[in-house]
Structures are given as C-alpha cells and as structure tokens.
Image (cartoon, rainbow over all chains, first blue to last red; front, side, top):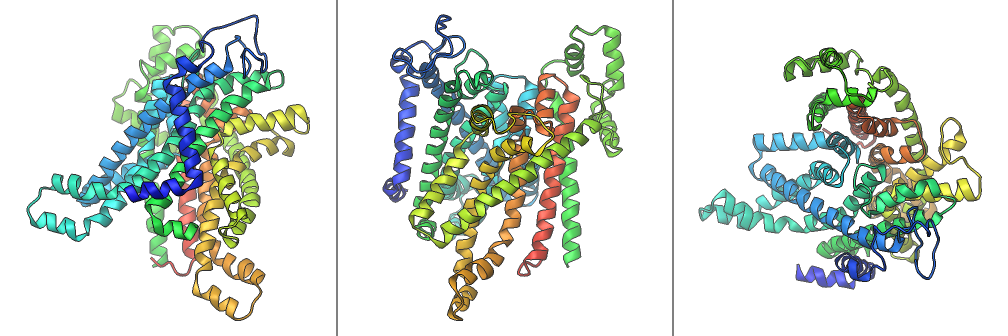
Length: 279
Length: 310
C-alpha cells in the first residue's frame, strides 16, 4: 500500500489532481474566511453583473456574489460525495463479501438484488426515488445511496471469491478461526485495492450525479448555494449573463476531473501490471 | 448448446423484468403521506373531496390489500395498460409510445457522434501508445467523463444557439433540433468508449496472429485496420450496449435542458407534477429497455466471437 502511494505520487496528472482536491477541501473548510461575501446576501442594486473588482466572478439575479456561492457550494458537493460514497462502499462491500464468502443461496439472493438495481440505467432510479421522497438535498443523498452500492458489491464479491482460495485463508480455517474472523481479518483487508480505486472515481461520479439532481430541482433547494442549482438558475439568462452558466460548471468539472485523475493514477499504482501496459 | 444458452439468457431477462416490477411497485411506498391524495391535490389544485378520494382509490385499486393491488397492476401491464396520467388524463402507454421514440432517436444520434469521435481517438491512442497523442487522448477522455452533461448543454446552447445562431436552442422535430442534444450526450459517450476501444485494441495488438501478419510483410496499415480491428470490434458490441445505458441514464437531464419530448423529460415532468402513476410507468419502461438491450448484446456476442462457447 505504501509502495502504491509512492508510485501514485510519481504520476504527474494524479499529483495535479491531489493538489486541486486539497484546494477544494481547504475552501470548503475555510469558506467563511475566504469568501468575500455571505453567499446568501442579496444586493438588488447590483444584479446579473459580470466580473468586477468588487465581485470577481460577478453576481446573480438577486445580486449574490458568485465567487462566494461557489466557495460555499464546495461544502455541499464534498459532503454529499463523502456521505454517499461512504454509505455505498460500506453497504456494497459488506453484501459483496457475504455473497462471495458464503456462496449458495446467500450469493444468489444478493446477486439477484444487485442485478435488479443495475437494470435501471444511470440516474433514473435515483431520480425516481428522490422524486417519490420529495425534492431535497437529504432525499437526493438517500436516493444516490440506495442506487450506488451494486457496483461495489459486484467487485467485492469477485475479490472475495479469488482471495478465499488462498493458502493463508485455508490455514486460518484449519487453525479453527471463525467465519467472522476469517472474513474481517484475512479476506477483506486483502480485497481493498480495487475498492479504493472505485471509491475515488466514485467521489467524482457522485458529485456529478448530485449536481445533476440539484440541477433538475430534486437536490439542494434555494437559497442553499449549490453548483448544480446555480447552473439551473443561470438558464433563463444565458445570453444576458453567460458568466452565471460558466463558473459553477468549471468548479464541478475541476473537482470531478481531479478525483478521476487520482483514481486513474491509483489504479495504476496499485496494479503495476496494468501500469506497464499503459505506460 | 447455443440454443440452450439463448433460451436461458431470455429466461433470465424475464426474471429480471419481473423483479423490476417489484422495485417499481414499491417506489410508491416511499411517498410520504397518501399518494392518491397528493396526486389529486396536484392535478386539481384543491384538496380532493372525500368522494373523489374514495372513487380514485377504488379505481386505482388502493382499497385492495397490497398483494392484490400488485397482481392487478402487473396483469394490467401485461395487457399493455400502464394506467392513466392524473395530469393529462392520457393513458401512460400512449405517452410512453411517443416518448420512447424520441429517446431512442436521440440515443442513436448520440451513438453516431460517439463512434465518430471515439474510434479514431481510441485506435490512435493504442497504435501510438505512450506518445503525446496517447496522453492527449487519455486526458481528453477523462475531461469528457468529468464534464457535467447539463453544463456542456448550456455551453453548446450559448455558443451555437445564441451567439452564432446556427442551431435551435431547444425543441423537437427536425434534424437541426437533434444536433445539440446529440453532441451533448455523444461527447460523454465518446469519452467512455475511447478508453475501452484503446485497451481492447492494445490487447489485440499483442496477439500472435498480429505478429504473424507483420511477419508476412503486410503493411502496418493493413495489420491495424484489417486484422487487428476485426478482432477489436468484438468488445465494441459491449460498448454499444454501455452507450445505450449511458444515453438512457442521462436522458432525464439532457432531455429536460433541450425540451426533448422523450422518456427522461416525461419522468421529470411527472415527478414535479406528483403524477406517480406516470413515474412508475416510465421507470419500468427504462428497465425493460435496458434488459432487452443487454440480452441482445449477450446473444450477439456469442454469434460474433467463435471463441466463446457456452
């Protein structure tokens, strides 16, 4: 693992990704100190203005400062990502290891449920769930958590199936260790590399999905500063105030791209054979 | 053997669709409060009278126990009856028919865009492995995957619709209306596919018969475009399946931005109108479409790759 980290730091693109993520985390933590204005403060005498000395990225329909709203929006996006990725990776890994370890009926039931969730394309099931629960950031997070776990479950199941055959697991079983000990001490810790990669790429995916739900009006509600809903607010003023439609999108893309770069780098770092092929 | 595999695959597809009906049916139980009350309230704009409420409950089968209601619901769907929209009064099946056409039209056009971009990019990256072209293709595809579709949509509208005035910003009907939404979806798809095409091509280039072809003295162009591509095409069938999933999965957002009258927009409209019967119908239709596509891909695969035997 440590070797993996060192290899990751050699990847130039992954390094850039890490730096950008660090910057976003800092701006989320210190938003109140960095942001020039309160993100909710309206100034109706200065609406839809473009970049200026007082408002670097301009103002929106209610005269709120775009830069401040983007900085505060980092909080919503990162917290959503962490909450959802945390939930789905734990759920998925637990179910996946149970399916892989016990096999038989347990495996059949879990795999069947996984398949069913995957028959609904992309955001569709999350949209349906969020829609039924009613619009709101928390409901959107619940919807993404309910639909995001199957891919983790599948990968974990495959990992456990492979590791289960290893000699040291056989040895542990022969020495009389219980199923629980074998799973948690000997199998799961050896299955984590692909999960770490998936979770890193998953942060990008979930941030994108959550912004999409908010863009549709199913996620964060006004006046919460959130990137997706800021872009949605920009739609009626595309020609008059294009800056409204540009900056929040850049923020989303930068964060997601950074997680993708780091995830991609991690995959190569943790699986040197692949890296050789990729160069 | 082959026939047995195919019939087993089709059987599995039916089982999946059946399980999907259970998921879709229970979606309604996520609604906080009485769904029938909420639907009537939203459709009429006023709280429904007790008579209206009990009449609609009876019509939708809500006076029955849950399992009976499920049976009636499935039986009606088997007959092609998906219920009626509370908002428009139209049968959901009728609405689905036109929306399905629009969604598939957009998906196919996006696939064309994706293939035009992804194939040259993926093949170039594989044949010029570890060069600047390869890195550019890698970074470009990551960029495409990281770009929110709704943002790309707004940028394209801004540039081609409002600044240059070349294309209509939204609407449906002509080829010109199709271009911007197809570019939006196609870019994301191309990013996804170029990576897969590249790695599939890299795998093939390592095979013995490629070395044989080169040793025979064939030109590099023939080796790559004829011998290698033919085998690298097989996983591409999977890519087409994935692309359809991508197009359908993002349809809610893209169709809403461009006012494209497909299933995704139908779903979003129904969600905000609290028209739960329609939401259920569309969600189920999405599952049926994906299951059908996946099954076809699996079956095609067996025909195309003689190495796979079941």
